[in-house]
Amino acid sequence: MINELFGLNGKVALVTGGTHGIGMAIAIALGKAGAKIAVNDLSEEKLASAKAEFKKVGIDAYTLVFDVTNETGVDRGIGEIEKELGPVDILVNNAGIIKRIPILDMPVAEFKQVIDIDLVAPLIVAKRVAPGMIQRRNGKIINMCSMMSIYGRNTVSAYAAAKGGLKLLTANMCCEWAKYNIQVNGIGPGYIATSQTAPIREGNHPFNDLVMTRTPAARWGEPEDIGNAALFLASKASNFVNGHILFVDGGILANFGYVKGENEV
Ligand code: NAP
Ligand code: GCO
Image (cartoon, rainbow, N blue to C red; front, side):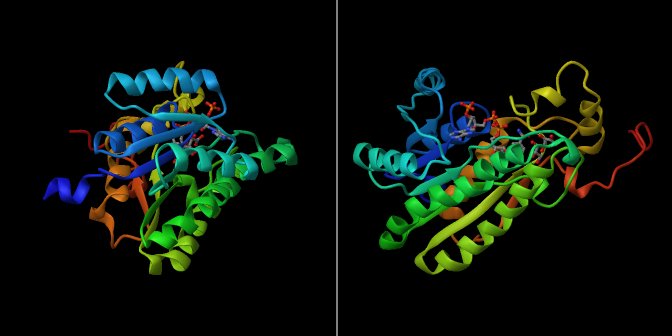
């Protein structure tokens, strides 16, 4: 029953930017459930070290370099995956960047770069794999959203604009492709301990206090917390979940906040 619902044997999964952090954790979760795994990145070196990491957990990942913002590169890359592993059944649009710069100081070019990678690229990659999913009347697309898909915060305007757009792009992909038995959902991680959050987590950064007091679970999330959620959205168990953003945040979005030390048990 469990394997029937959550097993991914025979499926091909592409996790973009899957050489470390959340993407790698998702790729490992899907690989351990039986999927054939492909990950791309910008760097051969990171792909080589990721391949070794995957091997340590028994996953023979197919790794390739392509920039998710480059339509030609995406087309070539997906073509290579199709040749090597077969058509993509599960797409995880994970690759993303953040820039923490106040609006007035943010060069427009840098704003556009974040939009390109975090919002336009998921469209580019989904447009390349969706036709095959439509033909096969089966597919799973998971877009990596964020709490910033629904909230702003100072200095992350480009990221929030991109992730906010990605929430509604996810909804629109659902509206257009659900009739072909394609489920398109998002994941909204809370604050997760990866290289992306290292600058606001390490070295006694005050943001750490905010996360620890605002998060009812009183911890930073681990990439594996997101991997488990992705396994649900990639499996048959979520076949009637569509256009949904699954927040995996330790309860932070449920918490208005409290005075530190008050009501402590
Ligand atoms: P990360 O450690 O910075 O990993 C991001 C990955 O995306 C890296 O492998 C990076 O490759 C890749 N990438 C960036 N631009 C790319 C491009 N143009 N083409 C191909 N690959 C590209 O970030 P993370 O924390 O694991 O986050 C992964 C996703 O979750 C992101 O979309 C992020 O916005 C989202 N997210 C993270 C958190 C969090 O708290 N960490 C919370 C909510 C949402 P290189 O390393 O080679 O640049
Ligand atoms: C930040 C963080 C957040 C997280 C995530 C929260 O600077 O606020 O990087 O944006 O990465 O997106 O869901």
